[in-house]
Length: 140
Image 1 (spheres, rainbow, N blue to C red):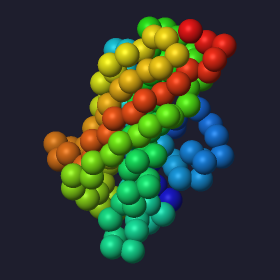
Image 2 (cartoon, rainbow, N blue to C red; image 1 turned 180 degrees about the vertical axis):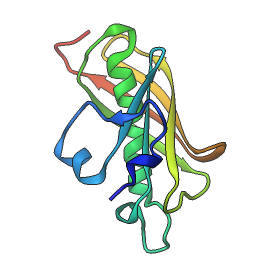
Image 3 (spheres, helix red, strand yellow; image 1 turned 90 degrees about the vertical axis):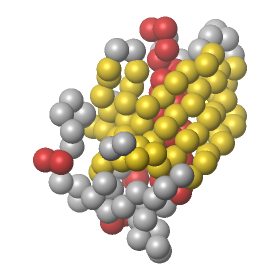
Image 4 (cartoon, rainbow, N blue to C red; image 1 turned 45 degrees about the horizontal axis):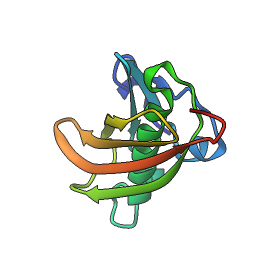
């Protein structure tokens, strides 16, 4: 279990609940301006055999960070689906680290949308990702 006293100020459990997010969490979110920041405190369940955070966990958080920001950009509330995710692993994250996202959006209107994300532990870059999302056909 995560030690909630180590969660940075302003972060709360992520507002969206789904079975997969619940299983890999807890994941936290914080809104600064018009950006959703996501973060998680690394616990034993996030580690691979090498005792660093599993790449699948890091990729999932990057995918969610870009997706939630694309879906809510410009006061929209869209459902979006990942079409493509590209990930570069830069450095490992370890047990007890707080991993936090920063997202940049490139295109937030229309059916196809683009964004990128960085995951960091303090100032250390852990991962860079870019993604393409499709808004549901009934949404513009």
